[in-house]
Length: 59
Image 1 (tube, rainbow, N blue to C red):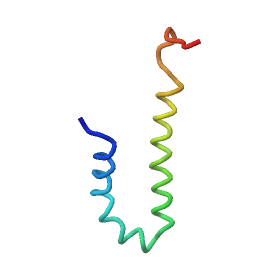
Image 2: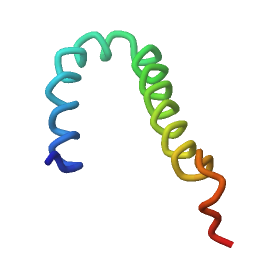
Image 3: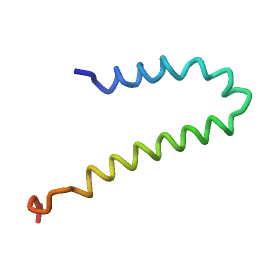
Image 4: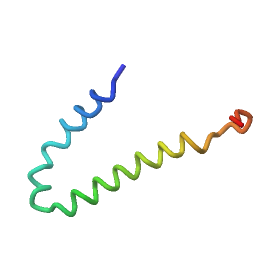
């Protein structure tokens, strides 16, 4: 079972080759990072607040 730290190291392994490109064009790297965090935030909010089953209400 993968933990959070394993996932972070896995992403770091794949992102590291793009650092040289990112140093030349930092705006592109920032936009990619914002898009990536936006996708993660979308799935977190979707799973946390928009449940598919209506019969499991917590109130």
